[in-house]
Image (cartoon, rainbow, N blue to C red; front, top):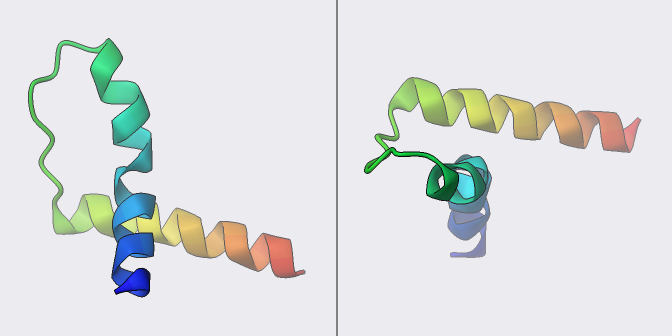
Amino acid sequence: ARGLRSLCEEILTDAMFELPSTDETELKVTKSYAEEKLTKMTLKKLKAVS
């Protein structure tokens, strides 16, 4: 369950901070949106390790 929570947080963190200051009323999390966010997460972790 912790792993799933980490994935959800990584995918939604930017939206949680950015959406309240916009006029957007919904967020559609598509496969490509999720993959983009998770790719950035993986790159950050790889940089932190090296």
